[in-house]
Amino acid sequence: MSEHFSVERGLFDDVMVPNYSPSAVIPVRGQGSRVWDQQDNEYIDFAGGIAVSSLGHCHPALVSALKDQGEKIWHVSNLLTNEPALRLAKKLVDSTFAEKVYFCNSGAEANEAALKLARRWALEVHGEHKSQIIAFKQGFHGRTFFTVTVGGQTAYSDGFGPKPGNITHAEYNNLESLKALISDNTCAVMIEPLQGEGGVVPADAEFIKGVRELCDQHNALLIFDEVQTGFGRLGEFYAYMGLGVTPDILTSAKGLGGGFPIGAMLTKTNIAKHLTVGTHGSTYGGNPLACAVAEAVFDIVNTETVLADINKKSQLFIDGLNAINAKYNVFTEIRGKGLLIGAELGQQYQGKAVAFLNAAMAEGLLVLVAGASVIRFAPSLVIPDEDIALGLVRFEKAIANFTQQ
Ligand SMILES: *Cc1c(COP(=O)(O)O)cnc(C)c1O
Image (cartoon, rainbow, N blue to C red; front, side, top):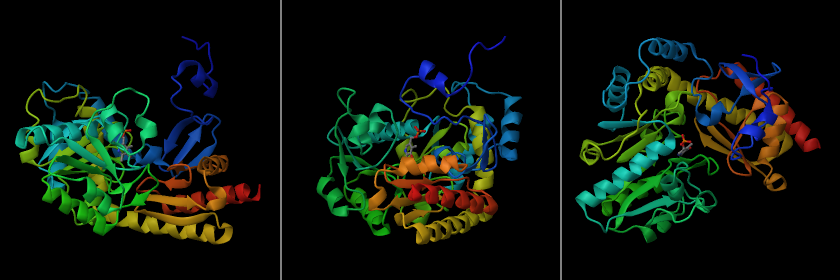
């Protein structure tokens, strides 16, 4: 069958719902930390598909897991269980605080499950009064109506009619502001250990300890949204491990599947037991293909060598960005942890993060933004040091072009 249309950017506007505005560049293949577009232009990938491609593109171990499982069985539904899901769940339980795992297909779904579980737990253990959910301004938890309302940007949740109720927001890194809201009516506090979408803002260690203490005082569940920070991204397998604070529920997605859609919610048995048969579910959640790929990601990422290397690579980024900034003075701060790094633009360039992203793309480099004034880097966790160096050279060229305009 011949194609009577050309597959290019213009087609997007003809046939796609207009909720995205993608660049003109259409990637067609990737290898490691490099991507090629339709015209065979090469890009260094510092974006990782928004902190998703944790082992780069087409990692041989992931391709092999996908092919192997793809020739065995793809889908059975949750009327039956399957080997890859059980293997992955066992590995997650053995390497975290958790005793039970629920699989789904995305970060939003993992958070939706966490919030529903928290509400169910509070209702059954404490009663109807305990339904308040507290989250944080500028936080991001996904786009289902529950999770987007728990997220801390009303711009994303307004305009869809009545919202799920009893959700309030405190200031991130401000314990007093949480103290003023929390009470025995609080069911759960949901927080990112480092706000990703909200501008790459790490939680202060003292703050996060204080959040745990307040939850304990008021019998509220602490939910860590580690959709972006987990699976090695911050240099620990999960970020909570480096903070000395253990949540009651943890959500994981993005890097977990290394590019194959999967999400997970992790928790303790005494909380998990409230999601009894029939209370929640997902047709695809925990399907063999997704779990086989995630297991392959787990086997590589959750090793001492890879985790230690993340912190070395992080330093290469920070040193490189500081050196660029010493020449061009565009950033007021370079922050983050592991391989989730943000560069905050100075006064003169406020609101121009997307323009920098486009300048970088023109030089053959993919980066991300986090809000209007922060450039975000979330490359593969195993990006070769040469690619970091080459990407930074391209980034410097982009900065030079942009600032000399
Ligand atoms: C990306 C993200 C989500 C949403 O994940 P989806 O897979 O897009 O649903 C939720 N929480 C955090 C912290 C995220 O970064």
